[in-house]
Amino acid sequence: MRNPVIGITANLVVDGKGRARHEVKDTYISAVRRAGGTPLMLPAIAEDRAAMLDAVDAVIVTGGDDIDTRPLGIPLHPKAEVMDPRRQAAEFALLRALDDRPEVPLLGICLGMQLMGVHRGARLIQHLHDEIADGERHRNDSIHPVTSDIGSGPVASWHHQAIADVKGFDVIGHSDDGVIEAIRDPSRPFAVGVQWHPERTPDAAMGDAIVRLVVEAARAAMSCTR
Image (cartoon, rainbow, N blue to C red):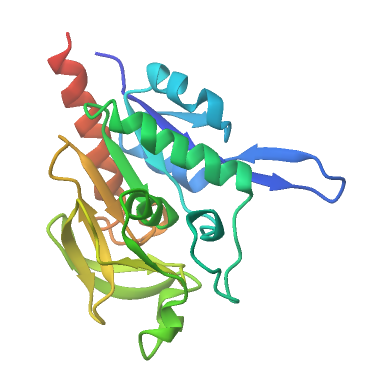
């Protein structure tokens, strides 16, 4: 059997001349390859995202800048640094398409988990520092412990937002200061979000093993359709 093709959502970056660039960090690509998958970048084009699912066996929604809450009717926090609106539209288009394709395994990482939650109506904590004593311990790839159903140990984090009041998901992991760190959609064979960055977490159980979960879920789904 061929290796599963894992779609990795691209960030959209605009250079000083106004030219947009779709890009995926090598850490995601390398983590997928180590896990036995074949990485495929999914450009941030909303109208094409549903069709892109025909080319992949699973999807990773990657990290990035903040969600712009204004289109959702929620005032934007002054500390927010929002992603390009074209990327945001593409990510939500992908999640809508995945609602119609529950058999496609999904892993949301950092922003990806937040998008999964907000897509289902979860409350977004726009600035974690407003709700916990030490928000800085979740930034700059700082290492802190997480306990979850899919693994426990030290993780690398880089976020100042998080989700709360999760709707439609089981909460399956927390950091030691109570931040929701992992969610699972019980209605799908495999749809998991993690708040940390497994693709650059040194601990094997909380790093490569997490990416391996979505690759193996894709492999299992491929076997069922043979």
